[in-house]
Amino acid sequence: MWNVSEINEFLSKVSENHLFPAYHLAVLTGLRRSELFGLKWDSIDLIGSALRVIRTLQRITGHQLVEGQPKTARSR
Image (cartoon, rainbow, N blue to C red):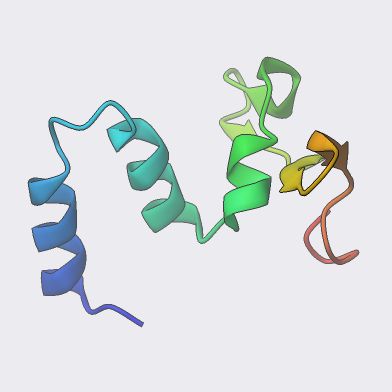
């Protein structure tokens, strides 16, 4: 687990990377990679300031990208 200083250093070093928004969201929320990349606009409630994890996106050998459910009931 990174401490605050390490998180800030990481975010500073990737600030120009095209995936910076994903890295930043991952750091702030603790989402798993598959949960992060499974997000779509219907997962986001801008008015209520809420984010729902309702699907995952995984690369499975021989099947390309596969959409599924979060790993645990708590994740959902």
